Image (cartoon, rainbow, N blue to C red; front, side, top):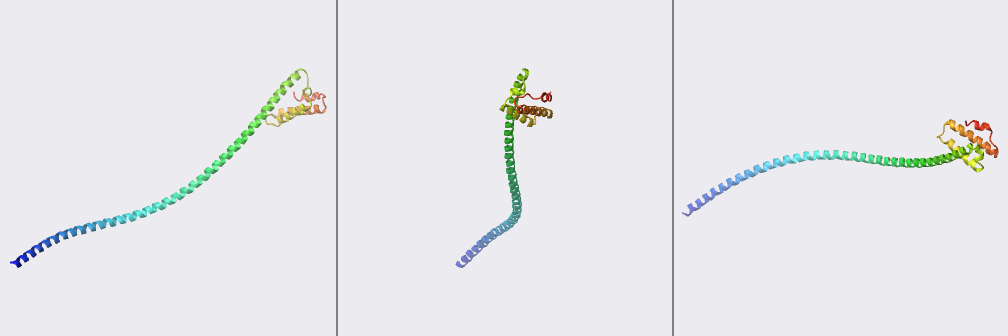
Length: 193
């Protein structure tokens, strides 16, 4: 009968639909469970991320403060280095100037020593022959010898007794130059002995 076949088909379709519905219900429940689990995990991740953001912002703020502190220190050290370099340059300039002055003084001292050695040799030769200082040195030469002796007296290389002897010698030379060729008094030479 056709009606019973239709009922049979309908029942078969009903069973098939119920079976498919149960399969879909099972899939839906699994998917719902998956969504719930994923949602919870995502919420935990979001919460962890927010905490991490707060920690990272605190670290950034702390690091920014440290950067500012270090930049300030770098600027201070750069100023200090610049100041030290300027001090070093000034010290080098002073040292160079002092060295140049020393070389000039050393050269002048060597010239004085050379002049004195020549004068001592000449005086020694003349005095061995029985002559006097006035006989050896005449005119402008006497002024030159007096200038050399004055320079020697002014230098710190002489002891006070040597200065006194040179002063006496220069006074005797001045008196001799004033007397224009007259021999100095014998008392002037006695001071040098």
